Image: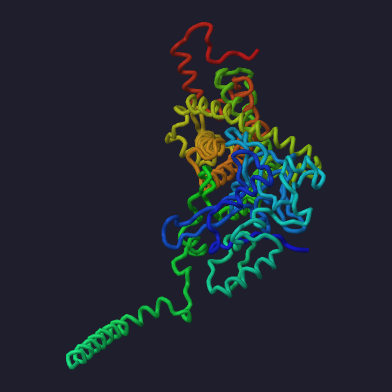
Length: 200
Length: 345
């Protein structure tokens, strides 16, 4: 079975934020939450790079490990999902996440954050809701994976900077790109997320 | 005709000179121009580009600029999250289990080996006031809050191991949700209790010379020989100062976690959680020992906080200097109706 991963080719990202918008629209993400974001490093200076980042669906996901109610888990495809019915909004997944993926509907003084929300790799939710159901969509967003489609952020990336899908395949695509053009700043976040990087 | 030829010749020569000059200039400029545009030399647009590993080498996390107004989302990668995960899931589990279970084992051993420390002179039947009603209230406000905080806090770390399997995910989550709110709000009564305790007993807990002797004699009771002590002996003073210090540490770190991103960022909250958890585990172990000596471990000790009165013989054995002061006070202010040592009813 394919191991789903994200890869952002920073040499192609133009900080257009289309992935951010696509995600918000496709999943009808609540106000104030951005499951995906684009961070620009060294903004305005030589060597500036933009990286689109969301949940990386880590290997040995730290969020899942620290969750006090064990409501976060990895699917067979390596997608990290959670159950909003079980989440107690403690914020621990947010402390543990290397990529700032878990977010909450409220700032949350006195522990009133509400249920955690994060990128689901457009694979619906980890709750009891039926796959592709209205209830699942309202709680977690689209389940494109069940329809045989990949996350919309990557699917509609205009420069094909953001890649999503089988980790081996996207790694191969990136490798070939780097070989052909002769440069590449590497697979951002891969070492932290997957304990491996793409050698080019 | 000749003139025309001459003119044409001169004109050609001028062209030739101009061409020579141009060629010379071109020859000088050629190498640099070739360097810039020769397609055979590969260009590296990443020559000055930021690289993830370099950035992570320079700082523990990578931050940038972000278009959305959520400032905290500008942190791109913080590998420290994995370290915090390791602390919480491995170090804290072992530390908590060893420290707390270790203390329980130690106390069980103390009970089995030494047994209950009896009042060697037996009960006198006469009582003396050790703690006022307000002092008892302050103690129990702190104590009840502490027990609730300890249990709900331990649930966040150990609940999924101990309670999740028997209760099932739905029931356990509902329980954990309630205990989270209990933990967050009972913290306030704990802080009030701790402040009261601190204010009431700080003066009597100041270190004195006699404390050194008490410590040298191993608290006296270890050798079944009582060391002199004032209102609080050195052991109690250590408990007091530990509780005050640890209480302050868990309060500050706890409130930082209670108000996310007020004065902290994610790294600050990770540190706050580590401090909170480690201090809390030690605090729980210390309070277990304190509870043991105040109840099972020593005859006549619980009454001090139970009713506020202690037996005169107990006071003589454990707090002789304090008792002497009290009795002296009573004698100097010898007023009827306020006997320092009233017969027990």
